[in-house]
Image 1 (cartoon, rainbow, N blue to C red):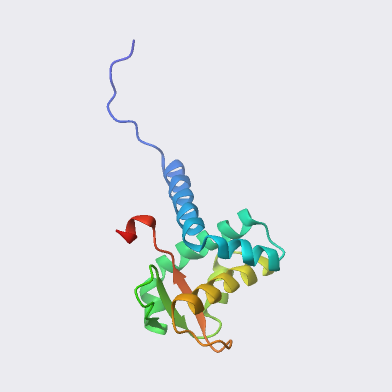
Image 2 (cartoon, rainbow, N blue to C red):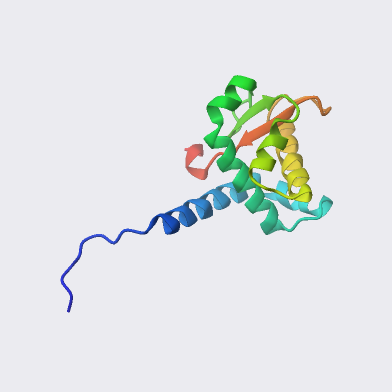
Length: 141
């Protein structure tokens, strides 16, 4: 019998995989039925879109200060999450950084635009990009 070695630490790869799973779960919860609506319109699967949205969430979070300097926070009238209105092309930079396919990038853009229009006063035209930072269930309390 081995003596107790104390708490077991996960290596960095396992920790990163766990964090990615958490982000995917938060994104899936937050965007909910909107993902299914976009999947019906685009050539990507539900799982592909959730992975792509999670990648964008992580990339945008890492660049949050830079994005805030380029755009503006749009009021969500008390809805959970945060919307940044950004210059056109900004979301494309993020999708390229995440190495998304054209279909995935278009699906991500559609989810973010539809959500931003639903919870914030984003213009109906394509004159503005939007990044919606997903709220987590714990943010609602």
